[in-house]
Each structure stands twice: as structure tokens, then as C-alpha cells.
Image (cartoon, rainbow, N blue to C red; front, side, top):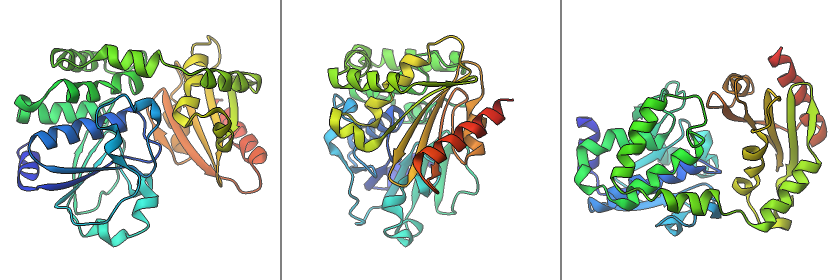
Length: 319
């Protein structure tokens, strides 16, 4: 903790990065930590490989997040909610040497193998989220700077990575940290009203399409779409994933999946009530949480063939 405090204290110009297709934990941890650093009079810039979903636009400083990195001078680069450069590949591949020559601080809760020497890592795979790690590691250092906006950003993880307490995680730890954030005036109602209870008619119409495409094969229930279709409904991937929240309430399927075509890749999101889908995701080179994970596969022939191969392999893994 002293090392973390020293790093923060001695660096003035800071760039914070989250992973591509950022979820609530990535956006919340980036904006919450950034707000804290700004209150410490740091010069902070925010970057994501692509623009976060407009579902998060209700948060303060959302518009500060840029999807184009300037590769300028920064004393410190901070990565939140990812453990390898592949999660910011469009930014990293442009100038790989840039990142090896700068000091980097990482906050993350995923598996991490052999981090580069210039990384200082604040890491806990037992945590449900990066927001939680940031809260636990900065509150005692700079509690007097915590305010309602910081607490609200960090509380966002509860609606995503813990599934509003539905996932079978360490609830004692989660509830303890949730109480801390509520006592710091986190605006839980703001998040519920704008993130959960704020679905557009277009998003519901797209849900109808996914329901029509829903397929049941053995213990797997899945649906699929092409990212290009989202333009017709004025929604993004985060809004399209709403169907998983609905269908994971169905009683009997062991695994529920969204399969989407995105350029030359097939990207898959998995959910389950009692199957460790993280193990399934890892067998494809992905990761995530025990009951909510993801992976991507390159399309070798066409989308339908790759989709069929993925389903067959998941079925085998469930045996």
C-alpha cells in the first residue's frame, strides 16, 4: 500500500486505460479512480480502445473518455480491469515500444501470468471486480477525498460483475464494500434508474429478434447476431447483451450463450447458475468469472461453421 501511495504521489500527468468493449466494472473503475486522482490535483486523461456504451452516459465525466490515444508524454500509465495488452490491441499495436518505455500501474482481478517488468500490479483474483480492488486499496490512503461521484462510479460494479448479488461469490466481502460505498453516498438509485430500468424500445425489439433465433441444443440455450445488425436498432453490444440478463433466469439450461459475429471474429458470452463457465471460456483462450465469462474465436471458413464448432465443443466440455 505504501508503494501504491508513493507511485500516486510522485506522478502528475496520468493516462488511464480500460479494455476494449468496456463493461460496468471497466468504466466504473476508470472514472472512479480518475476522479480520485483529479481531486489529488493530478492531470488525468481517459482512454478506451472503443467508445463505451451509451448505457454509461449518465455517469459524470463519461464524455472525458477518448477512443483515440495521443501517445504523448505521461508520467504514469494506469490499466484497469485487464491483465494483458491484447485487451487494448488497437492502441498497443500502434506503438508497442511506447508501453515498454513507460511506468505502468495495473489494477485487475483476472488471472495474470508473467507481467512485464515495468508493471506495478495491484491484483486479487478472489475479488469480483476491479472497482472493489481500487476501493480497498485507496480508501485508507485517501479517504478524505472520496465523494459521492467516486462512490457512485465504483458502485457500478455491483450491477455488472456481481449481478446485483446474484452470482455465487464472496458475498460477505461484496456486501461489506457495498455498505462502505453507500455510506460514502453512492447514488444507487441513479444506477438502477439509468442502467437497469432504462431500456429503449429499440433494445426490446432487438431482444425479440434474439428470442426468435433462440436455439436449444442439449443443455445449451443460445442466440446469435452480427454486430452490423445493431445499427438498425440504434443500440450497441452492451445494450444487446440485455437478453442474457433475461434468459439466464430460465430454470433448466446449464449454459446460456450469446454468439456474435464481429469482423473476422466470433465473440461469445456465457452465463450459468451452477456450471463453471470460466473453465469453458479458458479452454477457448478466454476468461471471466465462474458464472459469467467470455471468449473469442477467429472465423476460419464462415460464421455458421465456426458457430457450430463452438457449440459442439461446449457440449463436449459439459459431459
